[in-house]
Length: 118
Length: 113
Image (cartoon, rainbow over all chains, first blue to last red; front, side, top):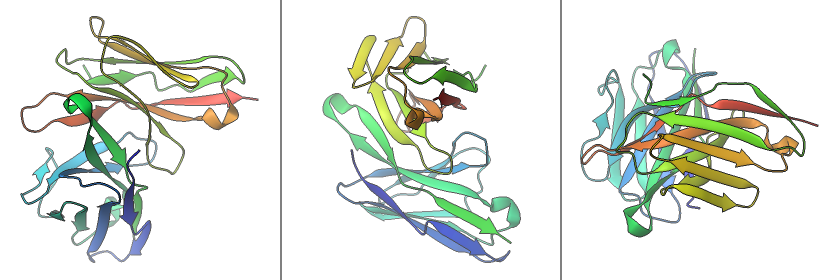
């Protein structure tokens, strides 16, 4: 399968600081990437869809001014959590969409970034 | 009604037995269905994808899809302790120009040695 990397894998920061998370497709080009958040013992929640060269599409209830997404190239999308607060502490996971035969899509996930805001 | 429903478990299966995981979905227009495995503290890993009615086999895993019943399942044969994980069912919800996956809450599977 396709390989997706994320950096960093762990972040601990003080309340009020901003944190940038990178998501890279290593062996393919991804016009669309997705950002998810997962709280302990809960399922994945889609935050936004990141499209190369255009603005991200945010899910209802996700503050676009707080979670800035940039998809400047076909292999890199970034998520910046601005002015992070303890309630933003979570497991952030990106995925990249891969199109196969018959326009069938598959999503491959990065290893995730665990954010702890003190 | 949730878009994708799974029994949260935990589901306990003896080693060597068949584990059966089930998932139902609400949108009849869905065309793509996936099973992901997630170990504790890790991100999801794609196990199976299925797009047509019937069975699809890959090693010890078999995915079954019944679009008429809006039902998709995953069978794990010869269960191993390493299969202990949370299994997420994901369904592509059609949305013109904005297709995305919707995940179930996951079924926690424990294989008992």
